[in-house]
Length: 329
Image (tube, rainbow, N blue to C red; front, top):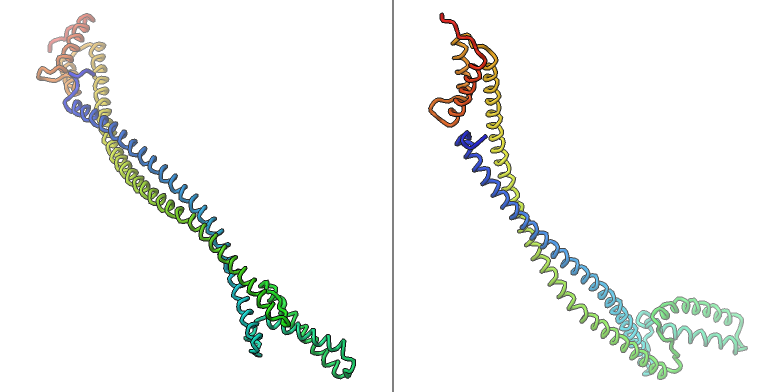
C-alpha cells in the first residue's frame, strides 16, 4: 500500500519501529563489546590464578624439602646434646664423683657399667677356682640379670647412634665423645645453613604469589563489573525487543484489517458487476457498505479519489454489460 493510503498512526508506528531497531542495533553492539571485555578479563584472571597455583606448588615442594633438612638438623642437635651429657657424666666419674641414682644416669653410662660388671663376673667365674657352688650360682643368677638389662639398654643406645664407652679408659672416652659431639654440632650447622638457603629461595616466591593473587583479584573485579554492565544492557535490550514486537503486531493487525477491507471491496465490486441493479435500495445499500468498509470516504481524500476511480470504472463496465434500466415505481 502506498504512502498516500497510509494513516498518520501507521506512519508514527513505522517511525518508532525504525528508531527502536536502530537503538537495538546499538545496544547489541554495546552488549557484545562488554561481553568481550568481560571474557578477556576472565581469561587474564584465570591465567594469573593458574600461575599463582603453580608458584605455590613450587613453594610447597621447597618447604617440604626445607622441613626435612630442619628435621635432620634437630636429630644432629639431639645427638650432640646427648653426647654432651655423657661427657659431663664421664668427667664427673673421672673426678671421683659418682651418682648411684639410676634415673639420673644416661643409658650409655648404664650400658657401660652393665657390660663392665658382666665382664668382671664372667672373668671371676672363669679364673677363680675357689668359688663354692653356692657362690657360683649367685654369680650366674646375677649375670643373667645383667645380660637381660643389657638387652633392654642396647636398642636405646643404638637408636641414637651413641658410642659405647670403655669405663676403664675415661680420658679416651671423653675425647672420643667430644669429637663426636663436635661432628654432630657441625652437621647441625650445615643442615640449618642449607635450610636457610632454601628459605631465601622461597621468600621471592611468596612475593610473586601475592602479586599474582592481587592481579587476579583485580581482573576478577573487572570481569564482574563488565559482566554486570553487559547483563544490564541485555536486560534493557530484551525490553526493547518486547516493545518492537508489540509495534510489529500492531502494524500486522492494521495490515490484516486493510487486507480484509480490500477483499470486501473486491467482493462488493464483483457483486455490482455481475448482478443487475434492479432497485435503488440495492445500489444505496452497496454504497453504504463500501463507505462503512472504509474504501469510500467523504471529503476528497486520496483514498476517496482512488475509490471514486474504482466506481467510475465499475460504472463503465456496468454500462458495457447493457444493464437494463430500472423501472419506475
